[in-house]
Length: 177
Image (cartoon, rainbow, N blue to C red; front, side, top):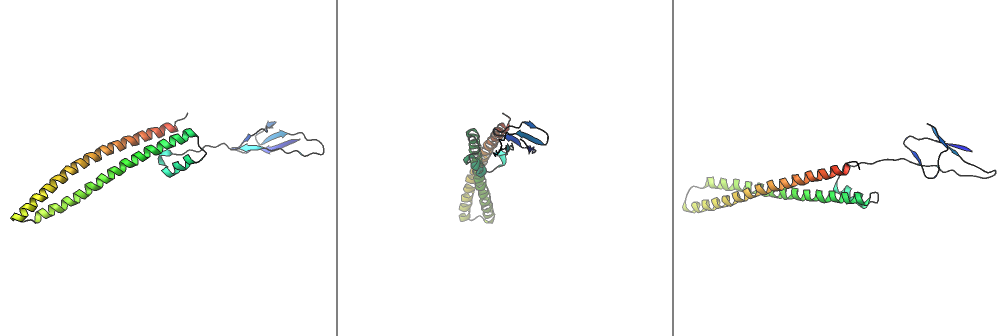
């Protein structure tokens, strides 16, 4: 008995069953059937596919799900964990930069207030003491502002370097093996 099974675009035969011949429209299987018996022919097909993800644009939660799932190899799981580690380090640097920028903005607002207060003072003995206090405060703040700007510059450089290294690492992951 010859049984025809349609050829479906994108699907390939799998398993132990092999076609006797294949045309553009059908796979033909030859099956021997004894009189008064029933024979079952199972045709297994798979649809090969490939899924690509852009690791640089996915969230840490998505990467965590892939790592915890059983659909990836140990090697890929290790690579994804490395991506998470590097992205976490970059996020920590960004948080440090934001904290220093926030402190810088607070000092700027405080200095504006102190300068306004200095303008309002007339010059009496009590006011001269207050002026000296304000000048010391402004001097201390200027020192802190300079330190903050240097820290922000250094942290930004470190973050940019870490981001470039992460990008190179991810690019290396997508390179054909």
